[in-house]
Length: 102
Image (cartoon, rainbow, N blue to C red):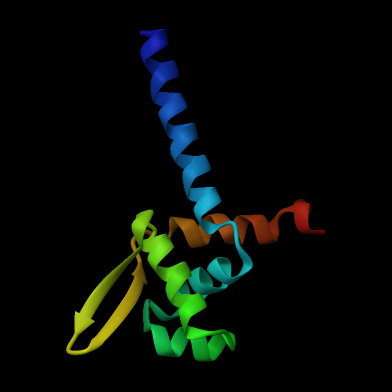
């Protein structure tokens, strides 16, 4: 029983590290915050608001989508990105509120 719990804990720790690595970039954190505030945005809106190259933003969006942090909704020719789970934004908010950044 204890071994089973240890294995479950290890899987959760591995998943947590995977998600934290996936968002460990300033642009990705900004994208997550924007999506948390707006619920969903298209690539054009994101790269214009961040004053960054469209190809760079697309790269980050695709990476976070591949890792299960974001998903898309298609509407005609437009693709809208949204957070799969707002808990990622809550973790970032906790880091902002912590003494780590003081």
